[in-house]
Image 1 (cartoon, rainbow, N blue to C red):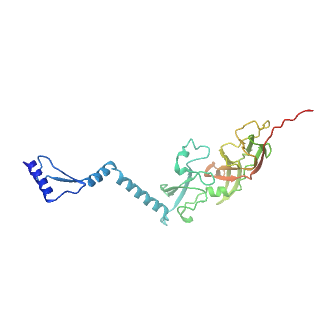
Image 2 (image 1 turned 60 degrees about the vertical axis):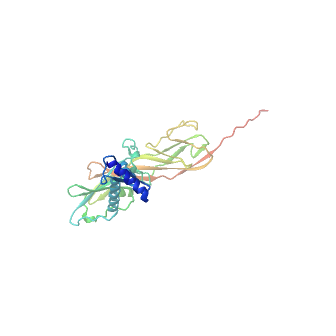
Length: 304
């Protein structure tokens, strides 16, 4: 009976010109009554379907909003209670020469600084040693949190800025042949590698500082660069036919400036105590040398 009533209602709607929207469908079954009839809107169905196949859309939005809030908070000037003391704890998450060991090359935040060193991780701790903030920075970056000096716990330490202020000598570059090569020949290059020691007096304590070379970043002047964790060494019997671990071959003739930037890690000792690591590295550029690359020509000479 209900089916006939529904059919009759539809016929009446057609007769008097009442139609559902073109994107809607009237659905009812044999057991439907007038109250049970449902009008389904295709647009609403599609909207519900989109929400169903993307159940995490709202979740992602909340995450993005949360991250945006965090970024805003991190960029704002941080205020620390004036009656409290704080201290910095710096450490290296990545060290040149150990990138593959620590998977540093796959961590976006560990992209090298402009001078080829890795960012330093800094923690801000309270008097109980609890970490309040943590961030990464490159040498020369402005401080993210401006804590007054009088609120910092007094301790003798060497940070990367002080370490870089010492007169660390650059590596000296040598070549074989001496500043000369032939096109497609193997120019042997090497640099010096010497530990350097400095003495300082901080707050009445004698502090010794060591600068230890750990990486040599070469620039060959022809658009080619290479980072090595060893400096190379002299090769007395070297010829331009011999390729060495630190040699370079030029495909064109001309004059090329070869430079190397040496990365030094640091250690310090207070009043003869144990050596402590200085987070970060000092990048020291050497004075470039010029390689004059010639080409060879074969000529047949007839003997009379």
